[in-house]
Length: 182
Image 1 (tube, rainbow, N blue to C red):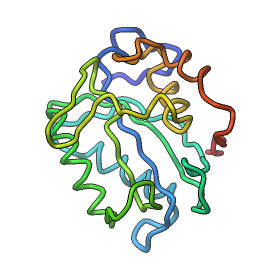
Image 2: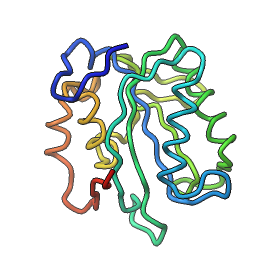
Image 3: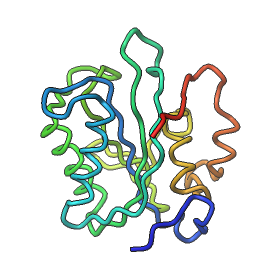
Image 4: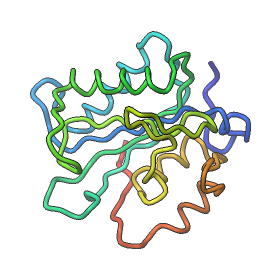
């Protein structure tokens, strides 16, 4: 697979993009700091059967959304190719989260790892199990859109019919986000 920088992405690559958001804001004994957990999760995904890693965004530190007293998050997005269906891919992401120690108790809680299926090509999915693709709040989140620009600059939201740049321009100014140093 050829890796492409964001400036070289073409519309076809962006239209077929399977995009996975990664985030963490709690350290773990096994993986250490949140950034290390995100890196480890990328390695696990890259080694997964049926998934081919194409590109990894820069890492970003972000304040919790909605605002709370939680620690800041480390966020990234990866672009992959997969033979897994959206439902099977989501099951795989949930298994990885559980393997990393995530326990789901409340919405918007602090977590050791969060994996979200942001987009599956141009598909619009809403199934009985609760899977909604594209992710229903991606267009409201700087921590999704800025890393998304890194790996799929020409991607267009299949429901809103807006480019990543248009979605970034429409973000409210109150979200705190900063690129991490390598």
